[in-house]
Image (cartoon, rainbow, N blue to C red; front, side, top):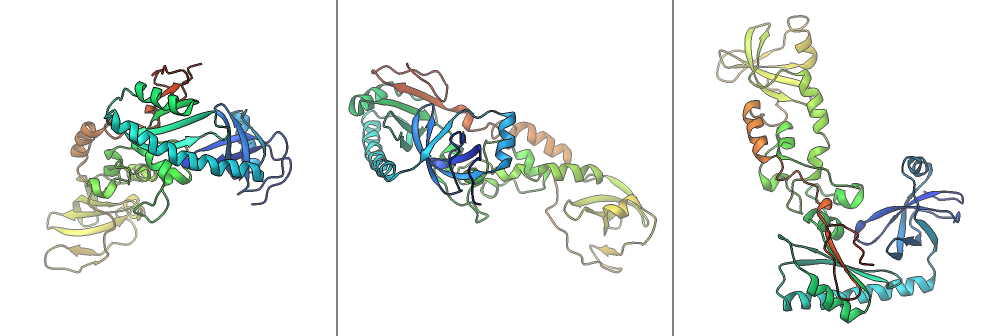
Length: 344
């Protein structure tokens, strides 16, 4: 998509797949893929333009954008950027060594230098709260600049490092997801999916974000279909619902003789009217409709509800809301639970 002068809002992507919106107040002639220098609260940085157009301009009316694009990158900017990347590798090794020396239970994930060298951010994960004040002092003494240690969750770690999911596509969190939404086991059960952790967990070890994508559709269609175990009256007599096929909008029922019948949503609505579906006995006798059933057999609702109450909460918390950070400039650090702490 080619850009043009006069575009007001653009979206810029930084290291770690982090994206932010910026105001093109200088009306630079920008296109997707261009690299720009931007002004942010923490200093100046280089990022890649990933989106622009009228849609972003309309979005900005609801949420004003104040950060600005300063200019397109120059050869000097690129040289400095490459130098910062080299320094990030050195800072990684130094920080890893200090973590081992102080025997801290934390895992270093990434290091990020600001373009102007005004701050270095170290991202890490940890199972428990970590007292990293002495580590901040060590790093501040070595680099003589502002140091920030930011604790992130495992989902944020996957977002920063990137990769491919079991579907063969890049992680959703590195492509289009702006925020992590709560995901629970009940979402899998609502869609009659296996609750095996190996099948519904992502590379981060948490429940896959995509479990939430189709749930609303499942719930909407499920309202129109009888529930598992419900008794229905068919042209052949009373039967019990044994399976639900959400995408085909159909159900399979079983009569007292263990004969299976399949009805679409339209047939359910007009039960007893129009054509009569063929019967498919499970065991012996009578004509058989061999139409395969889509999806797995859903669990009983009472059981699902009870298990959902046990599981709700454990996997429902968003990762990005739990960051801790400490900023060091003179040797003292602050642990206030915010993601952008400032000691000045």
